[in-house]
Image (cartoon, rainbow, N blue to C red; front, side):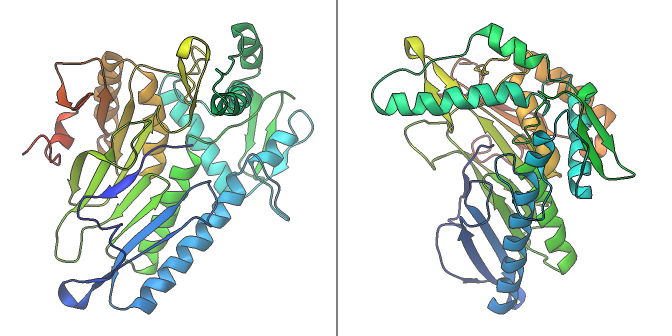
Length: 370
């Protein structure tokens, strides 16, 4: 799971009060940690009255809780067949699931193909190994000891059970079957973005005109503010020590999704003082460490979530080629990217960070236009 602290440059999230706007709209905001996904969800909207806002917020909470149950790989829920149910029945029997799971899996398969395998949810068996080592490593680090790392042989054995050839999706009957008993799905790199996009679409259908949904860092804006002013979205410095400080602020004048993958949220220190993040490259089976963070800007939060992981795994040169090809092939779904590193002095610099972006998103950057 991801990734990125969502900061409104004008203290949109942090002020904790309502603000009057034009045409009798008032800004309201709410936060809750009781929506699953192991995250804090923030909702901001301009509405005509508080009762309307509260109704929208109730819809947001109910939707996130539902999607959390559907996409959970760790817990069972009464009457719900979810990702855990699919994994538990690997090699045993097909599982009848909600059509939303079918859609998410089909989109995941598409993103695996589009990204040349840099995004792949079928590597759950490999992810489970790293998860266990990371949890143990975090405990050891708390006692001043380094964590351990799995051997490459163990990882490669687990990877033998990864691949879409082991995933049978029957859309007509809404069933999913993992044909290999050791195959596991891990949807952590797409589920929250998918849920955030679904919630935003539900809000728009219910009549919300101006708002922001932040599902644990998967930020989705809905139009602008009522007066036409752009939303100001801050991308966090990828610091392991200082949290919630913006590296740059982007003023987004329309509906947009912003998602970041980074090495600074969930990690542990292993042998020789090496940091191991939760972002595992399916090609090397190792935590990736080329960039500190990668942020994707695109209209769809599902795609932003998946491709932020994929682009994070690529070299800068490979990513540039990928983005150019993707945007040429899918002009209505074009993506923009912000890269943050510590090894590119030719890029923009702020403190210890080097960063650069694709040309289109640069126009919205406060840093590039100051």
